[in-house]
Image (cartoon, rainbow, N blue to C red):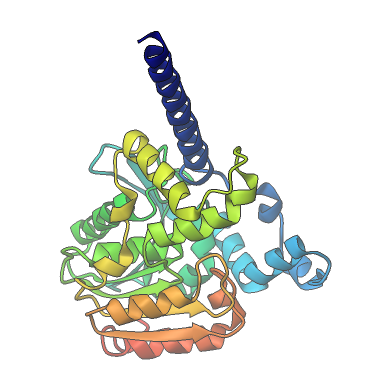
Length: 342
């Protein structure tokens, strides 16, 4: 009997140790991918001249920076950062957080609005090149800082799930000020996922169209991709498969952020969407695999079109070939927001 008791105690201790290790792994992954993070200050200092002058073959890191950041987008970021003529806007999210946005007024009498949603670990500034294009046409532009980013409150990244409701809040903010508004939603990366998940729910008729630039299909698929790349950095000697890593992260997110990561699924949202949507993706994207765009497009039941951007890395399509990008957007919008400028 004594031996049996000792054996059971040993198993219980081993189980407790394994559970503790699993929880520690989940917390480690959560801290790596779910906590808000300020943009790398070295990237903040880049300017178009520096980008153009760098040697793309110098190193893998440099090549990635040059590939995914280009002069057009840096110029757009600088324009947004100066905030000349900008105003500020705030709303309270459904869970009480105070969310902030930069508002760029358009032409007097114009009722066209573009809501530009940025991606992971960035801010409204990254949407500068896109926002400026719409503003140059006379449109009003709203550039929110997503929750947990920039000047908006929040202590975790919702990967578009909570953010979809924030976006609806911004749409309603516009309509309270301009009931005649015609609204376009334009998002990049996680911002695109936010847009797609918002279109999967009820939206006012004033939302006329959406542009999704390099969204993922589901956060589970994207996390498996990311966590597979992080495997070598994990604080465990075991070569755990990406599926197990995601399970550890998901369990921790349920406890700490109180939502199920599997619900962050743009591919399911587009199957319910009725909002006309243009899907864009860079062929050379290795952060959100380009194949995800094809799956999103196939799943979408809304009026739709797509654009593959040759040579474009992640979130770099607009600066890789401005003419191709905006020709595709303009052509798509002719059926929903005709004549372009106000």
